[in-house]
Image (cartoon, rainbow, N blue to C red; front, top):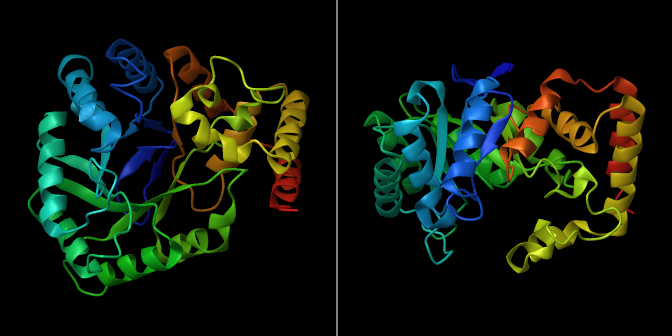
Amino acid sequence: MEQRHLGRSGLAVSRLGLGTMTWGGDTNPDDAADQLTTFVSAGGSLIDTADVYCGGDSERVIGDLIRDLVDRDDLVIATKAVLTAEGARDASRRHLLRALDASLDRLGVDNVDLWQLHAYDPRTPLEETLSALDEAVSSGRARYAGVSNYGAWQLATAATWQRAWPGRTPVISTQVEYSLLRRDVEDDVVPASLELGVGLLPSSPLGRGVLTGKYRTGIPADSRAAAPHYADFVQPYLNERAARIVESVSTAAEGLGVSPLAVALCWVRDQPGVVAPIVGARTAGQLAVILETEQITLPGEIRDALDDISSDDD
């Protein structure tokens, strides 16, 4: 798999990242093991988790797999902190550094490669929050730092603050939702990241599964949208605009002889500033299909057509 540098850093990661939000929950440890071996065998390295995913069980599963199945050095481990178990935001230095230590314990490692602020906390002074990044890196508990779910001005403020004085830890990445169904980040977050040299890690690059085309004729009984705890997550993209985009993606896929998934994923993967979309799968078989996109590059005319249809918000 092609490797890309994350922002203006020397950290190289695979151009697809493996999301683990359901590991230890809907994805059991055996399925997680199959996914991880499939991913690493294909040349994947970036694995993304968070301290709150499945109540910490996602990190625990990864820790078990690092100990028993794969070499730690083959992975670029990215985790996050800020959110509490109750869903509140706490970006205080106290909470963040405690959360990092707990993540390291669950993962069974001395350090993570990328430590990300999971969300912006308006109640905590940003300089205090960012001081935790400096402490994490200077102490060796994290190698690099990034943010997640930050708006453009929040990203710009954080990145500029860290660049303003020698010795501070730079912000090298930002994780935001980005797909053919969610392009509003192109108005501000993408330009900010390009200007600041911050790498983009798109989450939900398949439009929460809608861009695969599986909802074209209804909601399959075994799909996420059919599950009560995921229905609200998918529902915003089951509208007329999304349907038009999905039809265009499906038409392009038929013409190219590939899947709609491949078209949607390759589109976002090769957008300016994007380093690695974060993809999730329920099974190793589903992941293998996703990994086949490594061999695909969309023709310019297809990209242009998808740009046109997906930029129309009417």
